[in-house]
Image 1 (tube, rainbow, N blue to C red):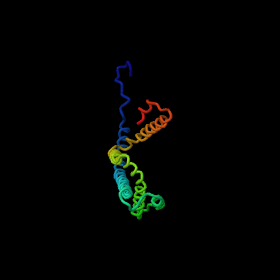
Image 2: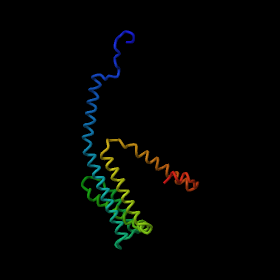
Image 3: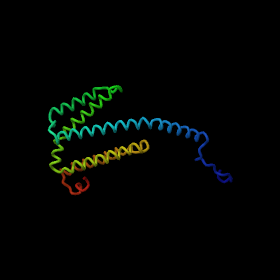
Length: 191
């Protein structure tokens, strides 16, 4: 040790047993990750396909309300959308009825799009470019999060949602406070 002239042995060097345990643990986890990768990708593909089809069905419903006289938003479309939503929730997924459940989902999205028709008419009266801007912004954000979830390592963006929701909540509180206070500083902080 000290003063004897012997070299100091490093205590940070791993032993043969710990190196072997680390390699087998790493191999186990990397194999499990590889096994899970394909089912996760398939599930994400199915989710995004359903979301895309639902968005298209809602767009067709909004188009039907705004540009044709076939159907218009009203009490019957609300009853239709709620009925299809209840039917979707009440039908269990047993693998044999996926097309039926998909039909319920697309019908619900279609009637919801028809229900959005009056709101879209009001937006068109104000400024029609708002619809295009909202559509492009939604697509960009959706594609960004999709690519992030498919390309990033597992769990890398896990805490981003909490941070973003905290900031969004703070902006909401500042906006509501500014309604009563009327501060120019708060107006500059919140969008």
